[in-house]
Image 1 (tube, rainbow, N blue to C red):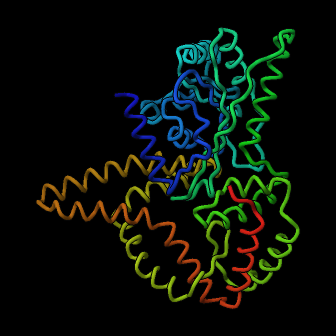
Image 2: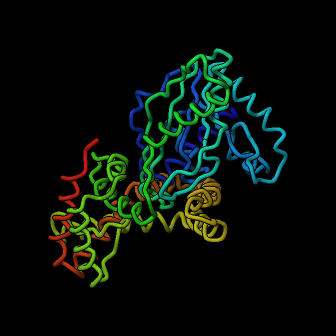
Image 3: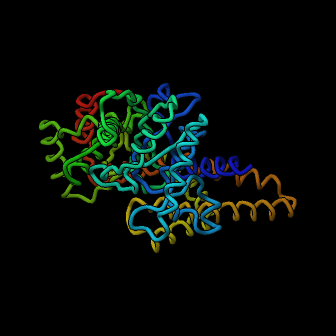
Length: 398
């Protein structure tokens, strides 16, 4: 029952907050047997909610800070360690690491974040020795261990109803030369982990380069058949000069008008302004009504993130920690009131409205941006479409 609760909670959190979770190369995930998943850490504890959808049987190695209160224990589960710099007794970490190795020896799956903490910056944070040490200890006990790297990529990590991709890398080799010392094995294992994680991640020289690459990748991902990660990864070495020049020219022209952006992209009607306008007129009231009838949880999430989030990598977490429990209470209250009043049909209507609003949120944002931009600067619709076509033709498909 305990495991079922966390699966349901994490699944609800992930699928309510994010509009689509895509797992790239799921065939690389083992169906059973001992497996150590080494995972990039981008968006706070929310990463765990998303990763669990890809590896539901795995146990997470988590910070003890996430288990200190009863409320936190309702949301987070796993083997807890005290990180360097955190308050608490780090002497218990040895027992926790032994528990990790025993879990693997018993044929379980374990997820470890080698960075120790999360960041949405242009590069991964330095990798610590914990994951490598656990792997070597398990291998030393003759555990038939598989080590699988996981990457995670959000189109806009903090945004409600954004899309996210989990990338499964190739398994990491575990044999070592027999004459290699213990310290040499640790260095070699850490090197292999680093190489594998950089293949499933995207690293840029600066925040500006990351922002430009992200904007181009989001443009590609507007086509649901294209991969955000594949586009982002292809831009690690830099944006092709032809695209960069075309983008600079378009940006200089957009600077002269009050164009809106969707995930950094200035959208314009693809077919006609009137078509997107009618779509907006039909979908907009549904999204607005869905928001109004669920205002308490939306407001709770907004206020919690505004007051408690100390960086963009924990905005989604605070919105979920406050918004989703309030949503569960609110949905229960609405259900009780409507059923108690003999208005069961209204309850069905409320549920349909809520789910429809969730499904239409992203598309409505896109139509609103394209309609506005098509209205105030229609002369830039052609150049914007040409730039998008250039991006689609230049960046690789999955």
